[in-house]
Amino acid sequence: MTEIIQKLDPDTAIDIAYDIFLEMAGENLDPADILLFNLQFEDRGAVELVETANDWEQEIGVLIDPEEYAEVWIGLVNEQDEMDDIFAKFLISHRADDREYHIIWKK
Image (cartoon, rainbow, N blue to C red):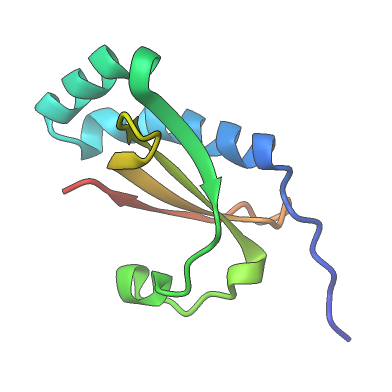
C-alpha cells in the first residue's frame, strides 16, 4: 500500500529554506556573494518554490522521488523578473516526521 504524503504548503517550504539559508550562508557562500545578497535582496531578492527537478541524483548522489520533495531557490531577479543569480537551491522533504533537506550552494 502506498503511503500518501501531505505536501508542504508553499509558504512553509519557502520559510524553511530561507531560515536554513540565513543560518548557513556565512559558511557556504563567498564573502562577496554574502555582501551582494545583503545589499540587493530588498530590491531584487526572491525565494521561489519551483517544480522539483529530476536531476538531483547527479548533484547529491542519491536517487529521489520528486513527488516527495519541494524545491526552493533563493537568489536575485533581473529586470525581466527572472532569477539569474541563484545563491542556493534547496530540496526539502514533504515528510514532517523526517524533514530531510539538501542544498546546492552557489560556487
